[in-house]
Image (cartoon, rainbow, N blue to C red; front, side):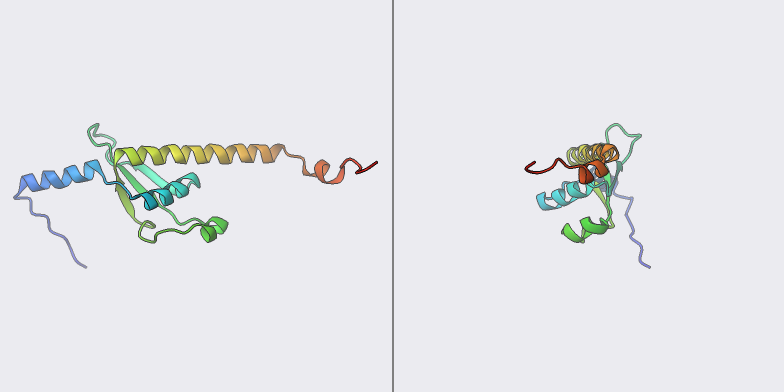
Length: 130
């Protein structure tokens, strides 16, 4: 097991490192698109980096591998999956919006499915050419 030592004698360097984490970083365009697809499917965990600090607007992001058909179809960067990423405020907020949109869309689809009558549509069709 290896440990990483951070020298606390250089307070300025320590503050700079902390500021980097508080700002977060941006995913590149292909990575963001992959994260957004997973967000729409509800396969991300997203939370503020430090909810008690109003100056810190970065987000923590964890991406989960999709299951079933989505797992077979979507092509994902293995570097994104199974890790915690520190995102900047803008991309974190956009992923939160996409997550919300995906949940709402799936809820509408399920509500419509609950109301659909398959039996009547399949067995009581108007006669063709009568």
